Amino acid sequence: MASTPIPSHLRQPANPYQRVTGRSVDYSWVSFDLVTDRRTDVLVIGAGPIGLETAAVLTAEGLTVQVVDSGPLGSTIVRTFPPHTRFFTSPERLSLYGLAIAPVHQEKLTGEEYLAYLRQYVATHDLRVDTYTEVVSGSRAPVRVVGRTLAGVQRQYAASTLVLATGGTDRPRRLGVPGEDLPHVRSHLGDAHRYAGRRVVIVGGRNSAVESALRCYRVGAQVHLVHRQEHIHDRVKFWLRPEVQSLLEEGAIIGHMPSTVVAITPEEVVLSDGARIAADDVVLQIGYEQDGALFEMFGLPCEGERDAPVVDQVTMRAAEGVYVVGTATAGTQARFEVFIENSHDHPLRVAAALAGRAAPPPRPVRPIPEI
Ligand SMILES: Cc1cc2nc3c(=O)[nH]c(=O)nc-3n(C[C@H](O)[C@H](O)[C@H](O)COP(=O)(O)OP(=O)(O)OC[C@H]3O[C@@H](n4cnc5c(N)ncnc54)[C@H](O)[C@@H]3O)c2cc1C
Image 1: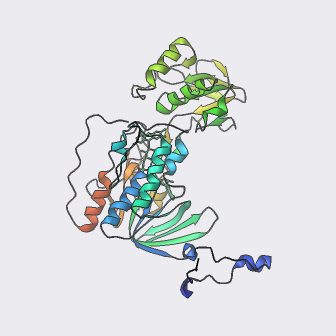
Image 2 (image 1 turned 135 degrees about the horizontal axis):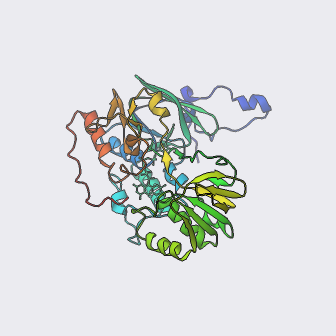
Image 3 (image 1 turned 120 degrees about the vertical axis):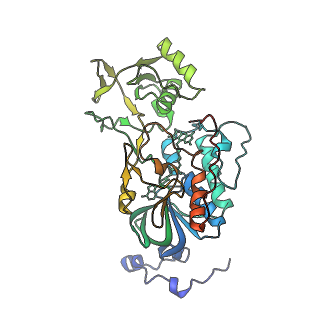
């Protein structure tokens, strides 16, 4: 195949690796575009569902848009969903602007299926996304951002408008007890297979904890569920609740409710009532916190119990030229109130604000939120 010559202004200076190794290396396959400055109308930070939806909506408005993410597409889902976990939200409510989800099974989607949809979404809307590029510094007037790739390469971005779609589940919540940093304590379940034949203590009483307890039980682990309330949460997925409830009543999953963890040792979990549970693994499923570093970087004030950015809900504007969309608008959510299905209006409001149009009327809220 004939190669396209690289324009002289994009050519790299002498390759440093060639100087070090003294060998002649063929770098003609490298995209030299990777190390040049990128200027677009809009820079979106965050390639989660709502960041990608914003990019598609603004591209349809005729704007040039660059998306950047520190992880892969849909990084939050990759990071937090154990294999084959289903969304609570129905497919039509997860569908993003301009591309319907049509599952062959008419069931709720697994994380893997939704990630496949996000890949298809990027391809369909021809979105420009730099994955594995963490934003490490930036300013907002004018918008200048430096991203660093996994390999340590710095990329510079310039834009007229910045959209933060950075989510709200940056780091797992911590218990704040001794032993929490021991190597057998983790916050993401991962593949349940790893717990076969092990004594597992799961902490929490919402969806993630309950689903983890069920999965570990099914692979043959001895499971203890520790929750500070008397019962598992009311809004646990309806396809999990009755089964876990009956396993708890039978004692097949051993419940400690209400109870809290006061310490973790290499062999035991110590509870507030003095009980000591022998444990090979401890899985903390007590929610996530938002990292406000980017809001601070761009000088955006945050407020309230959730430390949420101050955002005008009509335009999604947080400062001149800066918009915040998706779950990023909600700060740290103890209970999810802002999620995918009620964030679809955000990109449309940004588009209207940029075009100087009145904001579109809010979509009627579905009577039963599904999360
Ligand atoms: C087990 C589980 C089940 C869930 N089920 C549902 C459900 O049924 N329905 C629902 O709506 N939600 C559900 N959620 C929550 C869901 O994951 C979020 O609602 C959704 O991902 C939010 O989308 P978003 O685009 O607002 O943000 P995110 O998807 O969180 O995207 C934010 C992106 O910003 C990137 N980012 C952050 N900081 C930087 C930086 N400095 N530089 C570059 N990139 C950065 C992150 O890597 C991330 O990809 C569930 C979560 C879990 C854990």
